[in-house]
Length: 259
Ligand code: URA
View 1 (cartoon, rainbow, N blue to C red):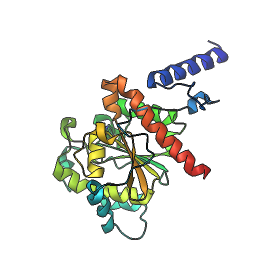
View 2 (spheres, rainbow, N blue to C red):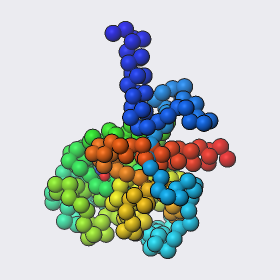
View 3 (spheres, protein in one colour):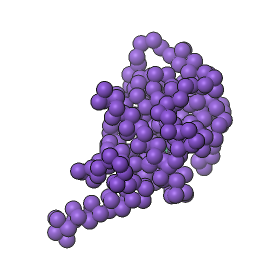
View 4 (cartoon, helix red, strand yellow):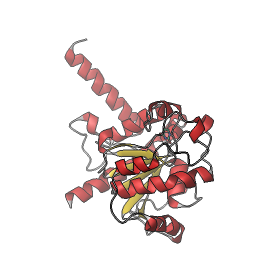
């Protein structure tokens, strides 16, 4: 295959991916990106989700006040990681291979928060490196960003055995470190991936189908919940909804840069 043919097939592959995400170039006022690797992404808005943001309700009060106990001085991620150390604070410690602290730009405008490491992440000590992670990388690229631009972490830093759901005591031990990471990075937008990420951050039991699709004020940032990439692997039809959600993030970040 010649260089030109290779490039052509690479572009076609990328366009097929956008199509799979439900991306339409023909939307009013939206031109195809000149570089197809910097195009857009996807998701489904709940009722009323067209609003750019909605006021935080009392449901979110507890989540916001948790930040009040954070150190006043902005900590570095490295200091937080050192404090986490060889963590033995919960019962996940004996079965983990590696602590998965988080990775990416320590000054990211956009932070993704998932649930907990899976087997691949536990092996490598890095978040979202398995199949779901590869899909997350594609979503980030479809937003016109690079994975290194954003910061990625999880509610839990250690893998629950057999990928079972995180337990409340595990979340309670681990989340102070997540909140310190958020305070350190100071993202403009936090994208909570899936039920666990969203419900834990927002201190609510509302289903992800209700939480996703609209911005929620969250300690000086905007929080957008969307479906977890692992859920998308099982339910590819929902990719379009995630695309809608991350487009809102992309457009909001752009509006901040333009203002
Ligand atoms: N799922 C998550 O929630 N986090 C990861 O890091 C990987 C898969």
